[in-house]
Length: 404
Ligand SMILES: Cc1cc2nc3c(=O)[nH]c(=O)nc-3n(C[C@H](O)[C@H](O)[C@H](O)COP(=O)(O)OP(=O)(O)OC[C@H]3O[C@@H](n4cnc5c(N)ncnc54)[C@H](O)[C@@H]3O)c2cc1C
Image 1 (tube, rainbow, N blue to C red):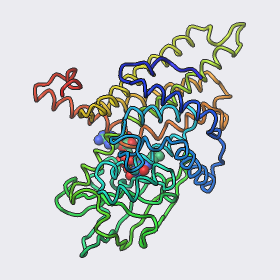
Image 2: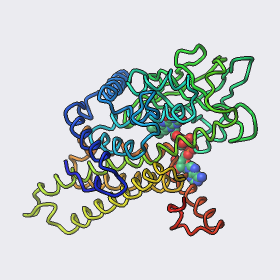
Image 3: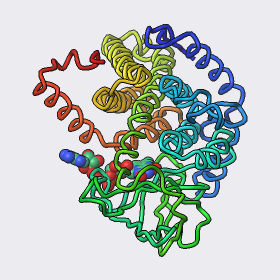
Image 4: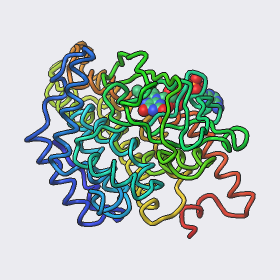
């Protein structure tokens, strides 16, 4: 598999390069082929659980967990490591990338905001791959506009009683616990939300619907009916749930960009393989300048997206604000990857649209990334708001990333 020189970029340290190389070897030897499961819900669930277990045994899940004492690779989540892992896994298997990403996203709020007891209870199992995590914020009427969520958690003595629903929840149906965001009413909109950890076995929590997805992975709608949890399951302070959610997304948003990069790099390799071997009109497809221009654009777009991605991850690891930079990375990498994969399919001709052909799998894998964790339009708003604010505060946009 072609590997460009990005592992030597100054954003990364020698340990990151070793990590990516080790994971590349492990992935080749251990991961089942990307199309190894059929698309039935049972098969996808089974494959996903198996991948979580494999990734845990391989020692990779600990990179998505913060706190060495709780099974993490370091005390703070290493965003660059998370990005490299997602990029590498995505080149091999979309479902393996998904399994890794959800363990981190589903437990990230516990790593950052959890009490000692919550960390001890959940994180070691997440890192080992023996507990499956999920992140539940979206609702039928609160997707992009998450502050409009209305699932309610009412305080009753030393418990909270939850009523409402969540939808499009990844790992819904196979998760052992859900980090849930519910309205507790301390204030309007974003000010009245609190985070909780809800065990999947809690009475009153029902998996009401399972969805089939174009890139198959577990996805469900959850219903909460008088679901009673101990007050100790609250994550962070009352009314701070929006901050908990956004801080978690700030860590993992650049990793969505990294996964998109992985899909795009794989598509470029496939396009090169195809275009340098397909004979037509007495030549090879890659001899035509139209093809060369397309390949040049694919490679350049991938490197541009990679630079934005690893800049955002590097800034996050330095402890700098990254909301704008992570949004730029997520928007650019997912949009570029969609175009790169589409161009690769075009070079494959009919073969490119045959089910389970690699480029066809990639075409299905990339599409949801432009929607979840903030659709492209939401990222545009985040970037614009950030640069307008910086301008009004007298900081030139180009200098923003360098502000301590
Ligand atoms: C595969 C998949 C997995 C997911 N996993 C999870 C999960 O684990 N947990 C979870 O909580 N949620 C999850 N989601 C939900 C996801 O976060 C939402 O789908 C996303 O936030 C968009 O919300 P929505 O689907 O309600 O679309 P809407 O909010 O209805 O938006 C529809 C479209 O409107 C456009 N749009 C949005 N805002 C603006 C604007 N301001 N201006 C112009 N256009 C705009 C965008 O193109 C957007 O795609 C998942 C979604 C998918 C597809």
